[in-house]
Amino acid sequence: MAEPKAKTGSKTGAATGAATPRERYRAQVRTEIKEHAWKQVAEAGASALSLNAIAKQMGVSGPALYRYFAGRDELITELIRDAYRSLADAVHAAAADGADLAGLAHVLRDWALADPHRYFLIYGTPVPGYHAPEEITGISQEIMADLLTACTNLEPAAGKALEPDAPAIPFAAHLEGHRDWAGDHPAPSAALHRALTFWTRLHGVLSLELAGHFAGMGFDPGRLFAAELDDLVARRG
Amino acid sequence: MAEPKAKTGSKTGAATGAATPRERYRAQVRTEIKEHAWKQVAEAGASALSLNAIAKQMGVSGPALYRYFAGRDELITELIRDAYRSLADAVHAAAADGADLAGLAHVLRDWALADPHRYFLIYGTPVPGYHAPEEITGISQEIMADLLTACTNLEPAAGKALEPDAPAIPFAAHLEGHRDWAGDHPAPSAALHRALTFWTRLHGVLSLELAGHFAGMGFDPGRLFAAELDDLVARRG
DNA sequence: TGCGTTCGTTAGAAGTTGTAACGCACGCCT
DNA sequence: AGGCGTGCGTTACAACTTCTAACGAACGCA
Image 1: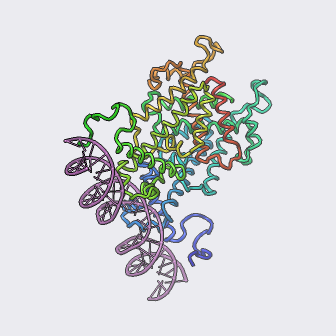
Image 2 (image 1 turned 135 degrees about the vertical axis):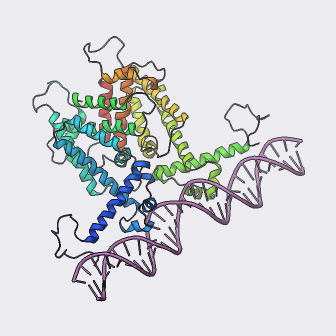
């Protein structure tokens, strides 16, 4: 009987609210472990994350943590999931406040600069054996949905092309035939294209900046980010 | 007398060609170690690199490798240096063959796809305590020089602007005042800007593709890369 | 008030990096 | 050709790491 069979009397049963004291305690300890883990990640990156060090900081013995996480990999997976959720929440909150594409870009940049290691946890070098669980791809699609909406709002009204002779972009046409990743979002292919370039271009600037590749080059990475953003908002390519 | 005082009789003295048998042997073993290291990096990434595993594969005992590399960090630093040099050589060879910006982009993409882990060794998540030695920033500038030349060749002749009323781009103006990183390369500020966006945009696409973030999205990452390249070559922003 | 689940402990296995001390053999120099 | 010193490879060990196993104690549900 490792699993309580029906949660007989106490709670609603479906809510995530703490049911038994044991579960509450367990959830709290898991949270505390992750807090210490985030501190380590913020200071030295995910590769320096040590379960033993966390245990020492918490004043417990090493193997105690294995009651709460199956191992280092599961803890890191959880951190990645939380990072995705944090980003998705930030983006969604901005979108709900009516932020346009530039607003979303600002949210992304602020979120990345707030904790570069957290950004690299998501968008950095992938861990060798790691494969994203289903849940994470779902969160990723949440972010993409908000991005697609912002991009759609930026497109000129259908049928009212600014330049009648504007040549069709081959890649946008390709996207029209491969838009499964957009789910059922009704974004025009130009918006799909813009969302993708929003992602790749801003990630290009951000990741190189956060990795320090611009250090000592003299120019202001923030201005490069802003220039790329301006180009994304103003142009159509 | 750890250092031979004057290399008395044997060789030219300045050439890097193997001098003593000891040095030749040492260089050969170092090379062999790095070959096994590259194999490990290609299979599981830099984080999985193990000196012990290399020693086992070579049929020697673990600590033997410490005669050749001060430790794991020095070996990785050497691998990073070799990776930079490999990329710089590939780019320079193409540039010497008269490749234009699109040609350089193809070289970059092919080089990255040939060994994704090697790409991440350079442009991926930075290792916590690592700081690039002087030599590496030099190699990085070699690459940038070829890139700047290709970008300069793409600019319209000075004073013959295509669109007389084309608005000055603020970031290009900013770069005009912060062009130390270009060394003494006589690239116009528009070329500086284009080189930077070439770098960030293509890295944005490549790194996300190599990290598998496009997996399952359905579209062809190569076409996105090509579309970004087309935009870089055709437009001015 | 029991009794069972879960927790934290210590002990230990199998790894890792890296240091220390010890021979042996290679090669430089006389 | 011979001796001697340098460098190489070895084993032994220390200090880590993740993670498993077995045990005792405390907690909470009935």
